[in-house]
Image (cartoon, rainbow, N blue to C red; front, side, top):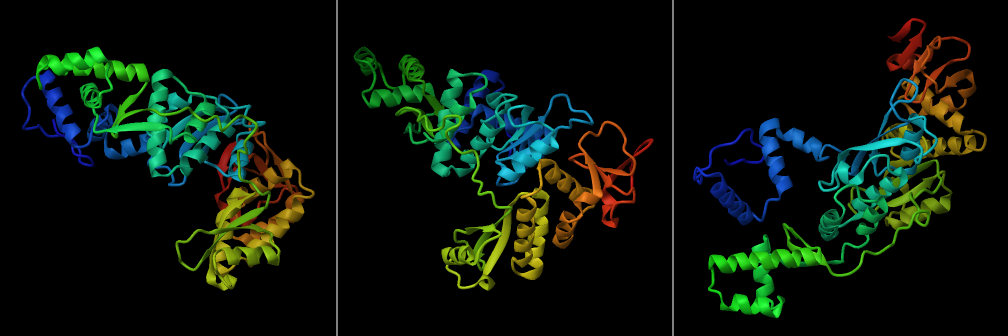
Length: 439
């Protein structure tokens, strides 16, 4: 049968011989003419034709945001009302990562249950990563994968395929991370798509043992016996060297895997500690951006402008790329768009920096819950709420009802005086005696 990517169903092939074995040979030959089709790609084509192509996109992680590599579910264990499961997309910033930890009510990244739900990298499956791994290492792996260039991506895939031959199940994250630093340790023989092709390549290159070379030299070209010898010799060479046959050809290791990453000896995040981080670009150009930590002194702003070759902030575009309060990022960007500058963003950063001198973690989580419960939609309101935190009660435990409390991803929050939450809480969920209702 013939399957066309993006089209539902299939059609009968005019090359059909009525014999499954012969049809398989024809299919392999035709697929090889297209540049090679792996078993995984063939499965995707069949499943896409039957179940729909969106299903394949979802399964292969193509529905993840472009800057994310993995979607991971984390929890204390069996999810319930008190310990919910939380979805985290990786790589995550420092703030996004710890926000997910707080929402999942867990002590830290080494004290949780976790599993990969989606992976943008086709070979980096749930089985390869395993369950309940170190989340810090998993996020670092996602960071490294996003940093790979085109040729490095091919190198990583080749290394991963060779690694999977040696380790059929889950591969330690430390090993996977170090593979990303060793993508240049591959030697490729192009146009080799089968054991027979490999045998032919080895014979033409004079790389086979002397007896094998002599045996092939005496055999007739295109003879079935000679072809079977080429296949046997190619397969043995592949197994002895631990190489793999890929779409690029035959690949083997040309060096050693570099042990660049060792647990505890490499930073897991690029985190300056600034409450707000913005990206600075000159006009609508595509040049590399500068990063500006807020609040910022005049000298820091001047250096950022100089980095993008701008004279003043009026020439620049700004975008918030990280914030201690992840939910505030769209509010900051909205404020930047409305005012055409970063004055409000700087004001919010100053407020957060001041509050962080006195707030403990519970206050930070309480503030996040309050933003969600009130449906805060403007940065001015988010700033105002930092000064009103003491007017509200908060608890993370959600298993029992709490009068006049709004249920958020962080826990329950309510006004201390028993009055309703601000009117912008129209979308917040409330827990009252007798169960959950919608305000």
